[in-house]
Structure formats: structure tokens, C-alpha cells
Length: 350
Ligand SMILES: *Cc1c(COP(=O)(O)O)cnc(C)c1O
Image (cartoon, rainbow, N blue to C red):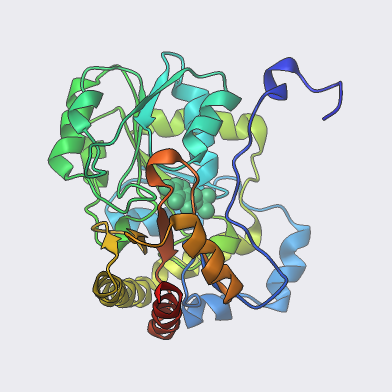
């Protein structure tokens, strides 16, 4: 760190992304990427000509992609914000709506407290219940920025729509961000509530269910007024926030909706099989609506299992936080990858 850095950033503890080691060919089950490639039409949309077009700026209004998303979800373009990954939207939300403080669960996406610290937003972390579900009634009447991942990460557990509506109703003076990064794997989206609640912002991403993590494309649904706020911040920081190639691939992705629904169904099926196999080996597996499982074994510690798997070429995500340190978060891969993992876990346990 240099002596030039502003004081307010000096103590900032940055987010730690899942490791991406290059020392061997791992089965990568640690960052919730899709094991499947993008749809063939998405791959075909890329060409040398498109790369040559990179000399031109991208469309800052992203009109083509907004039109396609609006048609798919039955919304207006004015309900949609597009960004360079959904982390960007979460960043903007803390920047824009944190003046009265923020509130989110103690066990959730690790980026929320980082954004809070980055923007000097005071935040309260609400303890998950004993069974790792969100105690949603504790969010009633706070009138702060409320941020909830649904399904939650790293637990994979969903909140019902009625709970989210309760939070929205009781917080008319606070923005409620529902982070739906994993909603396509079995959760229920609340996006249709944006018609009724001007304080609802729904964040989504092409990274997980749309097999496009490296493309960096996120989007949000909300009332036209909320979307206008985010556009204002975007045009004050980086108007060309999404590159031309990603916009192009995003449009092709929306058109290939069926392909992605099939892949999500395949992942859900593999998740069911994997959970059964892990339970058969004595694991406690939390009920997941996401493309990962959160599991602990009564005899093998969380860190020990993570390290033993890594040595065998399988990467999973381990968190050191006290209450979840005996768990590992395991991304759902292909059935073959899961079988291999189960075999190796069997050896480790014995
Ligand atoms: C992966 C993830 C995101 C961020 O996704 P982007 O790649 O930035 O679009 C946001 N929220 C949660 C809960 C996630 O797990």
C-alpha cells in the first residue's frame, strides 16, 4: 500500500474470490461456474469480424439486449439495468442506497460487507436461524438497504415469496435488493413484484445459469426510478461498462433460453443424485435450490476435507467463518465429475 491511498480505503479488507490455481488440471467445483459450455448459437455468434469491430465503442444503452430481456420477462426496457457482472450492480446499490445503513444475513455472499466498508455504509448482520434459514421477520420495519441472496449463498436455502413480500411491505423507505444469482436452479423469482413495490431491486447474472461467468454480464429489474438511479451512476463512472462481444453473446444467450433451461434441469438432477450420495456417506447436506451443495461430515473436518480433495485434484470452497467452518460448498459439475468426487471422498473418509 502506498502513502497516497485515501485513509478511508487503507483499512479496507477486499473480497477474496475463489482460488484459480494453475499448477494442475483440477475438477473445479469452487466458484459455481457451469460445467456446460454456452449454447452452440452463442459460440457461433463470435467471429473474427466481431473482434475487428472492437475498434468501435459498445452501445452504452445496450438497447438490443434490453429489448430481448424485456420480451423474455414481459417487462419494459425502463425496468432493466445491465452491468459488467452483477457484482457491479451490488456495488452501485450500496453506493446509491446505503445512506441509512444496510442489513443482511451474517452468513451470505461475502461481497456485501466489502461493499458496505467500501462506501462507508454501516451495516447490521442478522444471524441465521439454527437450521441456516433466514430469520426474515427480523428484517421487518428496518427501512434500511436490505440485501438478501435468494437462494442464499453458501447455504443454497431459499426464502418463500411471501417472506420477501413481507420485507418489501414493511420497509417502504428502504431499498430491498434480492440477489437472484442462483434462482434458476429451483428458487422462485420475485421479479414480478417490481410492478407493485417501487423499492424492489432484483439482481441477476449470466455467470451461473447462463454459462457466461467469463463474459461478465449482470442485470437488474426494478421500477423505472430505481433503474434511472443506477444509470446515473453508470454514466458517472463507466458508460461503456459492457464490452461489444459480451453484449453480442448476451443477446444470443437470451435467444437460446431453451438450451439453458435444459442445462439447469440437468444440474438440478445431478444435485439430487449428489446430495443422496453424500448423505449415504454420512454427510449432512443443507436443502439446496442452487447449483451447489453445502455439506459437512460428522467425522471429517471442513478444512481437512477441502485440503484432501485439493490434493486429489478437486477444488471445493471452504470458509473459515466459525459457524460454517466444518462445511464445504461444492459446485454441481457434470454427473461424471460428481461420481469421481464421491469416489475420492469415500477414500478420504476411510
Ligand atoms: C456469483 C454471485 C454473484 C456475482 O456474479 P457476477 O459474476 O458478478 O455476475 C452475485 N451474487 C451472488 C450471491 C453470487 O454467488
